[in-house]
Amino acid sequence: MSERGYHTHQEILSQPEAWESVNRVMETLSALPDASTYQQVLFTGCGSTYYLAVAAAALYSELTGRLARAFPASELWLNPQITYPHGAHTLLVAVSRSGETSETIRACQQFRDQHLGEVITLVNYPQSPLASMGDINIHLPSGQETSVCQTRAFSTLYLAAAWLAVRWSGRDERLAQFYALPEVGRQLLDAYAGLAEKLGSDLSLDRFYFLGSGTRYGLACELSLKMKEMSLSHSEPFHFMEFRHGPKSMVTPSTLVIGLRSESNRTYEQAVLADMAALGGRLLVMDNQNADIAFDANIEEPLRNVLYLPLGQLFAFWRSMSKGLDPDRPNNLDSVVKLA
Ligand code: F1P
Image (tube, rainbow, N blue to C red; front, top):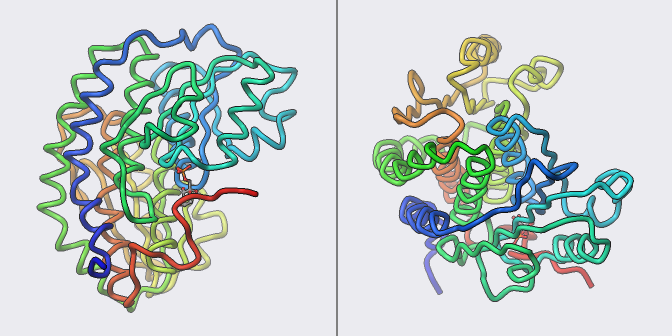
């Protein structure tokens, strides 16, 4: 039996290499459906991969200028009157680490049975049922992982979704920037792993709020879920400006507010963080410059979002370890939810 947390730690640290593999898979991808010919584009998943869908839909809209929505797969399956109003002709992107999640499989099966459009799947396990259900199936084995909480799997699937968004934007010249991500990821992990461990070891903190807006909100949701799953801590995500509208009442000196701060709205987002510090909250700011965790990446803002993930994951990992838990085997969780 491996030592406590071994797999999660290795999976977090190996993400830059996994991203290199994703780039090699995605660069070979041939023709895609023309997303502009559909009445709507939907992204879907469950749990972590639902939050990935939220982030991917926002990125698709920002890069293409066209609407996309994200739903949990259970909503596609059980509330199609909302997700496919009047049988809207839909391009569906279904994301799953395992390719075994019942809700995602049932949603895709129902979608195909009703001939609502085409399906693209993004899956880490090529032999899984979902991995062959799409009109296009994108397999990302470098994201496979032993531990239950998604880390490397999530970032490989997200990077692949970002490739798709750029391809659908028609701006293929921007794809080259993805090749810079692995090295920047390595540098970040080298530079800030100690900070993540130090913060994770500070058990005087008892609640966590992850703030992210625009294409970063889905990632704030995912990092908040990691903190819950790995360390059994109270954690919630919010859009930056929303945090003032009530939730800030929860801020205490034992609160850490983690800002996935953007360059484009830095002034407004920093003002929210400053307000929370004035209330006694503690801050951890991630951004490209002038931050506790600074990427210093020469990559356009919407294309470098994956960089917010590794240190946020590592922080949750070290808090779990500091609490004597095993992040490889989180409380109450299985790696896949299969319904009877
Ligand atoms: C989805 C998922 C995970 C969650 C847990 C149970 O799995 O809900 O997001 O963290 O591991 O399964 P998948 O469809 O992405 O394999």
